[in-house]
Image (cartoon, rainbow, N blue to C red; front, side):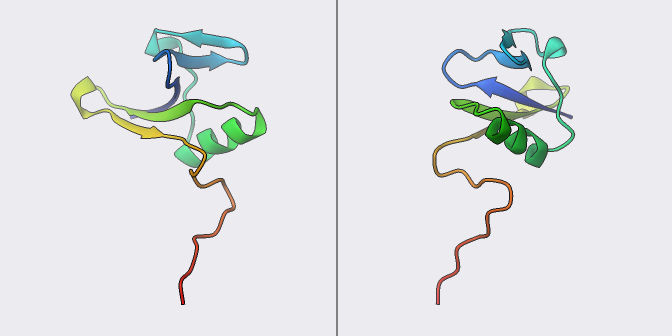
Length: 80
C-alpha cells in the first residue's frame, strides 16, 4: 500500500512542492497518514485528500481532508 496526497478538485497527485502529477508512480509516497497530514499542515496545502493506494485500484481508500479534519497533536473532544 502507498499513502499519497491527491488534490480534490483536479484528481492530480502531489509529486513535489509546486508539482502535481496524474501518474501515481511519480507521486510522493508518505510513511503514514499522520506524516501526510503533518506535511499538509507544514506546507499549508489545502484542498487535499489522502489516498491509500493498493495494487487493485478498486480497493483504494480516499480520506478527504476538510476544515474539520483533525490535525496532528489534536486531542479528541470529550463530552461529560
